[in-house]
Image 1: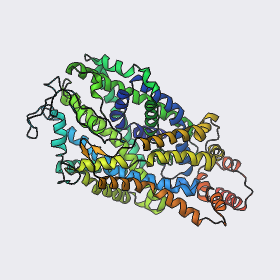
Image 2 (image 1 turned 90 degrees about the vertical axis):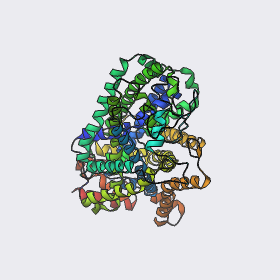
Image 3 (image 1 turned 180 degrees about the horizontal axis):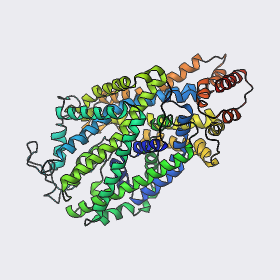
Image 4 (image 1 turned 120 degrees about the vertical axis):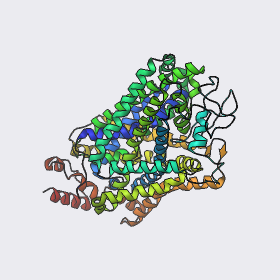
Length: 593
């Protein structure tokens, strides 16, 4: 069965933009700006988007487009490293198991936004405690502050320096949404309202993806377009409120002394790379649906620049609203320095209660977050599907069944995350699913393509595909700059590692052990497949085996020429004096003729 193609090139660009922007822009970017000097962080983020993100995105686009496949097939370029693709697929499956639960939480909040009074705006609900603080009525109450070391959620430290107790928004989150238990040792029962939301979530995802990319791409036009419209509305409305300019000033004014701290540079580099989904499989898989003559260099620049502008634009709307709420509640903008679940499910709802017509703004906010979640969920299913097809090509004929099986497995695993103690399980998954495999595989991608496969071969592939050269600085970045930056991020992720915790709850050693098992699940395929490939490669010495195994196999070269003009492909096939590569060239010529 022929590999599925994008009907329009814009479908591809919009889908990648959706997966890169996602809800992480709302949940992570404002937090990094607040703790890293506002405009100073924007400067660093912009530098690394140009210096590192564009070359890395370009690299993944090229190898994905050249392979015309998924995360397994792409490593035909250097077979011993096929474990990288397998490891990323496992990480993606683990990610899907808990990430879709977050969508169900947003859906639950959206449903509760239609009540005449927002249930998290007051303390007159059955779940509230006598110590509850109504955020709207108590202007002296400060907002929760948190430090977050994980990818999405994680460490949530509920603190209130002015008064004892929790705000009404905190109590709604902990006692109504989660019905939280005391720890991982007691998970309790399934939260059936959340289970219903989770079922709706998976039905939505299935309907978006089961017909293939040509249907999901049209849906992404809506899920990407709607957030832009709503963010613009938030910005306009926010700027008309008193105090908004204070928030925007805090956002854009650079605290230059922060630039002297190494942390801001490392966090800026890490966010610029991983907000684009480097080593997460999105770009490689989605680029595999391109025509072989597509110009990846142009696409990489467009996607990275639009992502940069969009992220900064979202920041303006967020800080305009926060500036108004800070003015109205009598606190500083820094009081909202929160991230992860704390920002998404406590601070956001608390902020909304201060706005005129809070129900309307609450609905719009959670609809925005849900559409951004869909932009992330749809490509992850395509990653898993294409990897499955790489291994079992005939599975493409029963796409609806394979996707149904993938989502069913995610759903069953997701049920444990919506128990009363499920937040502890979800935090554990979030802490370890991409640690440290994401930074490790990002570094290996650059090293393998830049050094093992070689930038010379990469330039030949580019000439075969769209016949134009690219600036030399890009190849220098791929070979030298990006690997060094990835190595720094990898080392920093190990250095900054802390055992998992949720609020005041400290995970026991056995739970941390389970976390490392989750982490190992995505790392172990790399060394295992590397050694297995090396063992199966012909050769009398280790050096011969390494040299032979590092060569691209026949599937890599043959696959690339399927829809490339014959004369261009034949002119750019490199000559090789070794007998086995001459045979590969003859097979390629025969296939073209």
